[in-house]
Image (cartoon, rainbow, N blue to C red):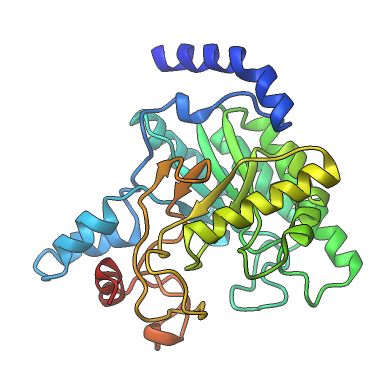
Length: 321
């Protein structure tokens, strides 16, 4: 109860400033309602370590990866999404920790790339899914990353399809505003090498960024924190000059310790980055992609499927080999 009262006081005294600097539907700060970030006890590296205690790589993977707070992804595989999101947010709340959840189920997901194709069966099905997701979290403190890649994936889409997608994302932000008042929602803004800052600012604004808390960068990618921070600041300059507001942003640092070699699908020689924390040139540095989980049947993950945990890849990523 103490942390709830403290958070309420912070929200009441800081709301006017927050609204003046970065308009948002949310006044509450979930980082003040919790004591650090939640470590997923059922992540793929946690499960692998538990099942392979005798493996010589287990100790390093456990201490450097499995014990680091990182996001849990939710999609069609999650079953009843309200129950799944509620159980995860509830477990974190009982531990007084802040969970990071990824909503990854938009209709026509990865429509142009196709590597992660899927998602909800229709825009209305997606709206229902998001409403249940937000309702499952409810008043518990949380961070939600909304639909990675969705705003950079326009290359093969016509205007009607773009309008449809932006409408779905706007509706999603509104659902969290109504049903999850202590959740910060970050709309995904791709990475610095996907779209120029002016284009991404327009995509974000047209998809409802004004009502979200902020935007996210570098999800499942390898680009340095410095390059992402410069890009985030450039996006904010465009938002300010064109639309009159700016937003906080977060960077996925899970695999960017050695930066990018230009490849996105299981490149060799990459390294884990700065662990999840507040600040670091952005509002937060987060592990959103799990180090060691495959990007697909490619690169050093040849023969694997997307999302499969590869212990040898994880182990090498600890040391940058």
